[in-house]
Length: 395
Image: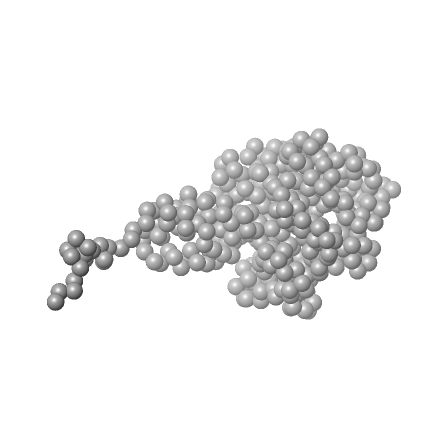
């Protein structure tokens, strides 16, 4: 007896062995959601995947996806050592499990000293701009590092006139697709990754710049005090906090200096009108929800955060938050708070205490505060900023 189905019901054998071939567009879309470490392995699957992943359009698409899931990157010194490590910190970990301890990496690959660098000038699109210097030759240099792809540039931007007190910031010029470094010391110079040249910025205001600049939409922005060059006290051993005598400063001296990385020209922006009292500690700039934000203490009792809703429009300042400092549980009143991240639904704020070397996660809905616990023991924080993984080339 023949138990085989009629020929009309039999599937051709060719269909049984035919592979399913996805269009490149779908493969590209699926790959763009993977982390960089996985993509580096996927390059070895086949030649066509390697071509897709190496394509500049894919790099841009993947970067766009990554910006939705930022991390923090931190430079720290373990206790009783001069070895500086760079360690990523998961923002999702802090937001979802704020009480769960964090272990900072001690992987030798993330040791800055082995890269002839001492710290980080800035983070932009997955690249870290490192800098190093030689006290003996008074020389300074830069290196551009993508920790995710484990690639790093040669030493670039050699400057023979390095000084001990300067500031640097790293950003991206959208108009020319160029990464740039800004060096501040009695004026400003700009270095472009690609042409390896430093250029002076004409008519850059000589002021005292309180803290590192913040990069936003092709600009770098600093908080400055005009006409206040002599009577300040900067304590680098206390988290880089700026102390001053309030009686020698007026509100009118505070300004934001903004440098357009495309035109390499600068302008000044006024702070919010509600900022009407000189704070006892260093106020700061940050970026929250893709907006410039300004934060300062009021009478050592509250932290006020202002948001510039429309960048460059001084009338668009609005008060975002006013936080009672007792809620944040500072170790003492001499604490300087800097906002690091605000969740998408505006219900959780992560702040750094620059004096106590600690971050706290503040839940705005229920008022709870969780202090981040580091399992590595005592360590000094040098730098902490936003970071995203990317495939961006560092040379």
